Amino acid sequence: MNQPMFERDLLYPTEAQFEPGSVHISVYSPEPDGRIPVHVEAKTPHDPLANLEIITQIMQSDIFDRIRIDLKKSSIIYLHPEHDGPVIRIQYAENGKTHSEKIVHPEG
Image (cartoon, rainbow, N blue to C red):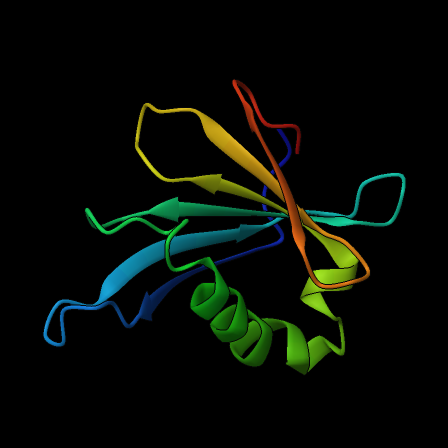
């Protein structure tokens, strides 16, 4: 796997007011089709898949707005909800809906 171009930890709100979730974000160089691989790894026991929309909004505003990239149009998200569990590959369609699939080893 290539080295990430950018890494950052993010906090996000959860249903428990005083228990924020935390994820580690790794952004890699664009793939041949132009999409940017973004790996999101859970750092707390909260389910990042259940909080995907808020995590995506935070990544967009904190990281991708600065470089004028629309995360939903230009990326593939690899979600690592559990340390040793399957990786979920998520891609947004033009209508804003997600397409996801579980994979064993993410590309990137």
